[in-house]
Length: 104
Image (cartoon, rainbow, N blue to C red; front, side):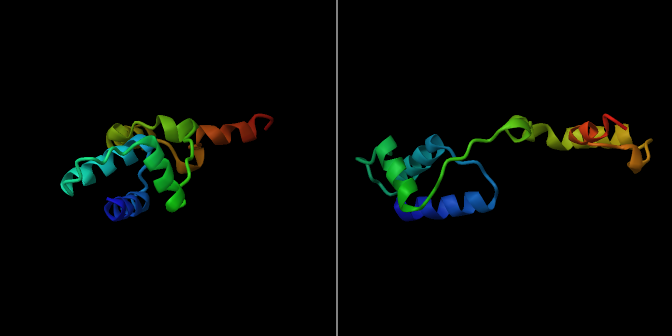
């Protein structure tokens, strides 16, 4: 279970996935099932110890990254391209950048 979960975590992190404690526990239970380990519980204590053994930390995702509707990203990107196609690129700004020009 430990080895399988370690490989899964490495692949998930390389793919840029966000991994919560619940996901770790669920994946560990899935691997336990595949290994016919009926007594394995994937408890909070086991997950905490797994994270310590593999130096995994918890980070909170804030602001834009936490609210991004990833399932709609392609459609939204295409809509944005259609809206912006009539504007010169020098006239297009990210909303975060507009605060830089408020006194100009």
